[in-house]
Amino acid sequence: MVVGYALAKAHGRNIDRYHRLLSTHLSDVERSYIETRLLAERSALHALEEADHEKELSRNS
Image (tube, rainbow, N blue to C red; front, side, top):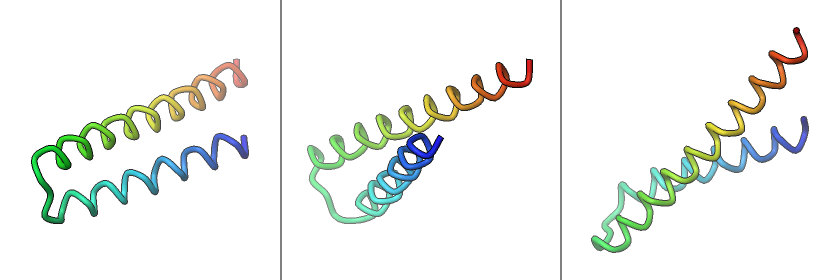
């Protein structure tokens, strides 16, 4: 559980950082890369949340 929390926190920090970067002046290539990384971080965070939800459901069954 501690590892999952730490991973979720890391993904959240990365998402915040990418949002800040997107508000700066970037080339098209840089913007595309940041948007790709942002999508990957959001997907990873969503997967962690889904896994946590599934664990909670199986624990309550």
